[in-house]
Image 1 (cartoon, rainbow, N blue to C red):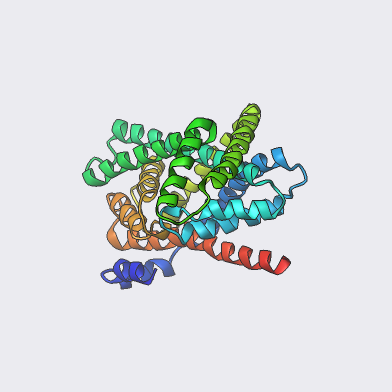
Image 2: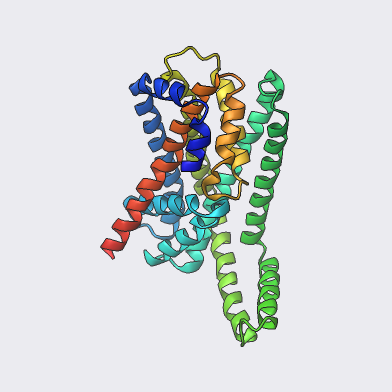
Length: 320
């Protein structure tokens, strides 16, 4: 964070401080509200999946689980730590392991689908209105990000609904570990793991029968992304200087930023997200205003959630 602040402020320090001092606070509060609404809709999506397996699961537990996931996603490369921890905490709260995995996988598939949908819409809008044709390299990275997220979604669907493929992967991994002398009784382990894989397959297939669950989760995620992608434009409105950037351009820009950030290997996409934000929004906004916006945007959409995620971990451990 300090390194990013240094490179953001080193050439624009005085301009950034003057802009921060004159920001319209009501728009900052509105942006925070929109981030909170985004989080609530994401929790509603997760809660809809969980309630299929445990009707007594409280929404407060879901919120805490989601915040813990945000924290571990934000502190691990490629955001890979959130989902395993989410499964772990769901199991601790009483869900079966296979049900916990099914919930997390299917909820993430819906999230990926909506992310790709918004990304595709942004690419179409950019081609129609020629909004960011001057940012050639980043536009190409956006397409790469779109393809990577699409492949991830297909891989998750295959893991969820192809029992034979799962068993094949599990068997090969266990065989490799046995040859490396990491595990001893590979036949016994294969039986145990394959049983879990079969239970997961049954759990995912049973969930798939309830299409209304997926429709609700899609609607919740769709609304969540609308609020999330509106935040940069609200921050633009908070700036005292006149900024010639439309809502459509802001929407396309942030959709591109999110697609690029999804494959940045640094925890939280740090560096990559800020760089993409500055380049896209810098096409319309002068440099010190862009620097101000990226700092506030990252605090609201990243560090804000990290703080509450850390608190959620602490309160969960105290309760236990």
